[in-house]
Image (spheres, rainbow, N blue to C red):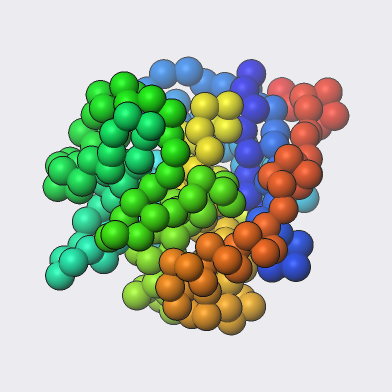
Length: 237
């Protein structure tokens, strides 16, 4: 068994995104077929609780929009070009004993994520991207900024596919384990939906300073939003 979350768009007033956790039977292994089993298990558990349909945001999604919204697919504007979102995030980390490691902007995304310096430079203290410093709090604010920067040029096309073609109740990322990670592309996608739905994306994206300020003003503690649906409650088999 494993516990995995879904992310439900709410409103600015309600802290943007609600996280709901479900305990599901877990298919171990790295094969795509195992990932698909886990996605189906999570979506089925959420559906029994009233959250359906859901869109998987990852390279394992069976929906084109879900694959296109994954961090390994998205690119962030940088100088006169663009770089993969994953590279921008990993290379911008500032640790107590080093960073940012901007050379990671120009390597393969998976190579950037595995770079030994990210584990050997002490505690994470913040982020630095294009001469702008981002804090660790509000939690995920730098990752959310990068994600929204990446989708911003395609916002109308993406919004039609994730709210008009099908009205998704929430978003998932089967690779995300809240016990090991903080940032999640599914959560960032839910935030994107909220800001687009409330016509606030463009005002929020005026500058990093504006974005951090507005997110800090309305975000609530993640744990206060979590709802845990255990096996015995949902009778998951």
